[in-house]
Length: 423
Image 1 (cartoon, helix red, strand yellow):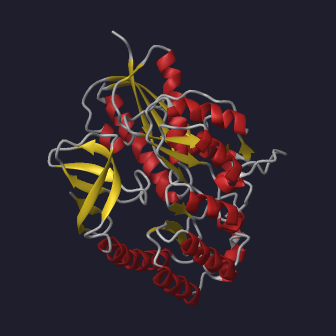
Image 2: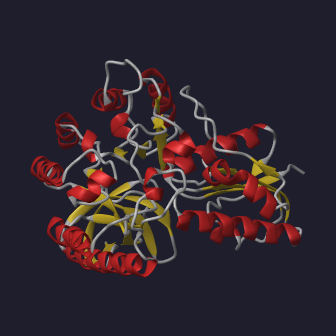
Image 3: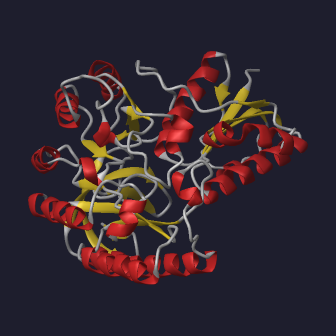
């Protein structure tokens, strides 16, 4: 009987990509991927025995570290019940805290750091049967935001050459992938670490020219400082590029932006958003903000909150500032009390829920194109081009002979806080 393994991938899409590389490594050794578990919550419901559980951890902020540690504990519990023979833990948390983790979790059989980033095209095994996939075009970061531990974990920017990117693109285009999500720490920095004449716009044009089966191309993780006019023009013009902009602003106060070392001002952020919405009227903008950054005063938080009320972002992720050792902001003072940070976070999420409900309600009665991801009992689960997989809303489509992986015109008949209902 062939040996079986499961892989649990935590954190961001970049980790999902890396998990596929590890899964392929074990498949080549003769192991069989026995289920599609990518979180320990799904894994805990699986009662079948495994030879190996691999856990790809995230160590970016406190909440992610907590989830990673809980997942390790869950795997150890399964091992004690003899449902698992071996546990291998790797990824960002191990990169940062391997010595401590070894002392606390001696039951783990093997520790690895982050997956080595290879600029060359490397085949990956999909750990979930989905109609979408990811393409990592760069690793590490050049931006040096004062709050961010990514350069400590992943190092400086390392871009893949356009030739290697296109090799992978052509491969994915043959795999019946309907949606390609282009990822990196900051994809708008692609190519800045070598003397290639191309920039992201030229790379995207090359990707478009070398694909025919991929219908949606989505850009994820862009820095507002590097978002060029030519990139806006390309998104506006090209039908296959999703009208979706992932643009983390982190804050809007000039003083806080400067402390964060974001390299951009409030005026420039507002100008960029206006430009995107003028050139791409149908565009959905996703952003991310941090509350409770060291020294954030109540008036600066109110400035951020009032800006969000006016900007009305289609999608928003808010994060409570996490004090990460080794980052410049770790030693900034004064640190904001946790209760204050939590109150500010709750205020922003409450506001965003109202904005999302209002924006979603505007779809009622309209027909939009959706990609069916999964067929369930009463509904098919789908997404619009305005929603990234796993992090944004879904469309519940009343099921009538629909097929996963296909596109359908859907009339929206109802709207919830973040999700839609269609027929």
